[in-house]
Length: 401
Image 1 (cartoon, rainbow, N blue to C red):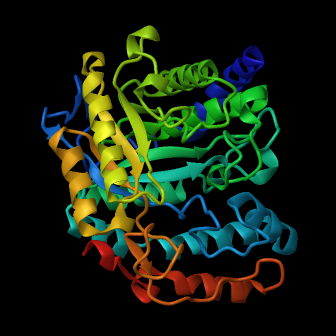
Image 2: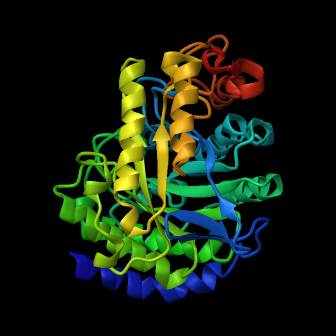
């Protein structure tokens, strides 16, 4: 299967290069690189990431987005809109939702907070039409990079780095909604899905090579559906090589957020010859009390320190400690900052509950209408989604003020 995937890539890389070219080489920030256990820019200035995940924007999930229960993920929502209104109208509608969910004002909020990084979840359906699933030679959408280019441009002007996070590979890596399509975990056994994901990463790397605002590439989010650890390491290595064939300089992020969710899930980078990599963990103690939350954060710090001989920077790509109040929140941040762990909390905004809730730095102040994509008109769906703009319906989480 892997050889078939490799053949797919070889057949299309040259054509893709002609189509894309170095479209986003200019960047407002200096390029980053990993050195020892730290991150530096091209002027050798030490960079420590603090920031937010832009969850619910380019990958929607019903628990944190205004989606109806019949269409709880990105794939089902897009498929239903395709069926009712056609692909072109669906893509326009999703684009409008995205323009409302994250605006330039939201990025200014992040800047005003003093943070310098956003992690942006994406999935394959942001770049390809849904009909590409299962195909052996998919063509990129004409607007494949429109939203990401906007984000990178906006963030560059604000001095905010962007981590591009592949939340949903072709076929899915866990069956979770956050893959873009729930109940799908086909990636690990499907050569086309593996090859198409490698091609997608090559396209992204080719598009953003030389762009300093892009901090780097997070290869696979939470690959919890993998049959074993070896499958994850093999996938990481294949995707690493695909990225490096297009872009030799950007940082590559690799997650230990599967299995026991710690550094033991990852190999020493020397095992595969990986360079300029950052190892990423996620830290959740959902429903835990303050002691459990702070112990979890301390365990992450200890794990990072115990692996310093690997000379790899540490990054807590997702965590959420807002449910236990400001003191717990501040303690967690202090633990990470004092030991040089980079972090981006989950999530900037969420519809999980009214303010104050445990999931959004911005939470809804009241409940706007969630549209029904099965029955509502195009104008009603867009009008309803438009009520969920941060400045209109959300306020900063009062728990951590």
